[in-house]
Amino acid sequence: MVRNGPRSALRDFLESEASGGIVLIAAALLALIVANLPATHALYEHFIHAQTGPALSPKLGPMTVHLWVNDGLMALFFFLVGLEIKRELLDGQLSRPADRVLPVVAAGAGMAVPAIVYLALTSSVDGLARGWAIPAATDIAFAIGVLALLGSRAPASLKLFLTTVAIVDDMGAVAIIAAVYTASLNLVALGGGALVLAGMMGLNRIGVRSLWPYWLGFALLWYLVLLSGVHATIAGVLAALTVPIKPTPGAPDAEDSPLHRLEHGLHPWVAYAIVPLFGFVNAGVTLGGASLLDPLPLGIAAGLFIGKQLGVLGAVWAVVRLGIASRPTGASWRQIYGVCLLCGIGFTMSLFISGLAFAGQPQFVDEAKVGILGGSLLSALAGWLVLRVAQPPRAPISAK
Image 1: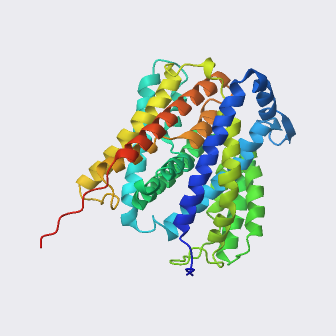
Image 2 (image 1 turned 180 degrees about the horizontal axis):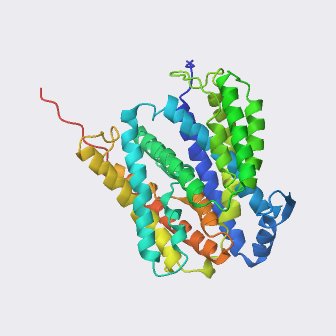
């Protein structure tokens, strides 16, 4: 018998995110292979640095494949992030204040502790402090992809916990990018962007539900933000917050909710094309060029692997112990620890932030990639192993 009715938005999200994460892993591995094979290294470098367009801003110069992906296509990634943030806050797992406590505290500690670990290990080298935010991010696609390999061994509550922590983590990363990694500002372009954003908010307020005006406003906002000196991807998050949403409990795919319709339409393109392409363009680093024991790679790897698990697990333990929130339903502390390890997978956002932190310093960028790959891989393997052997909590024995 075929079951009628709406599908779960969360289930759709986790399924596509998991398979998208596996595609991302494959793209990153392919980049590492072609970047390190003598026969394909030059071809790979020529591809990512090939000039493919005019100079859209004086700061960036002529557009290359790398710039189009990082400054253009990744704006769509951040657009989707913004849609997911708005949905979760107004119509999802973060819509109730009580549901926000555990992921918000866990994500906050999971960003602060890795930064502290990083700074402690890199303080002896001038210029490295700027990369403090690199190990603070969690890659939701990569992490959910690892969880998917475990099947039913990972309860749904843990997948939900990891997803909400990663979404709150994304909010923090967006704020860091806007506040910390912004160059000198073009106030005219910034003012123009503010007017466009106000116009998009006005469209929402007067009840415009067609999507094309928001797409048009997003494109114009992206270009003005690109010119302003703020990183262009921030335009994606800002534009997403103006898209109308109709709360749809029990009907997550309702056709009359523009945000839900846009999110479901955009997600496959981001998960299966944009993020894997970003991984391929950015993960290709010559492994013989830097050692994982150098200060920068070591600081990032330790921040991801040690800092993340300490921060997230410590926050969860404290919140539960104080009675502020309950631990994920049906999950043992060992299983929670395994998910905290997976939070140390910082691939996509960490690579993105490293390019901003060390712009114009290719040696530091390559060293950062080594640390990101090392820390993320170690976190993924350790998290998978812990979850593979961890047992669910024992059910209490009822008295007869």
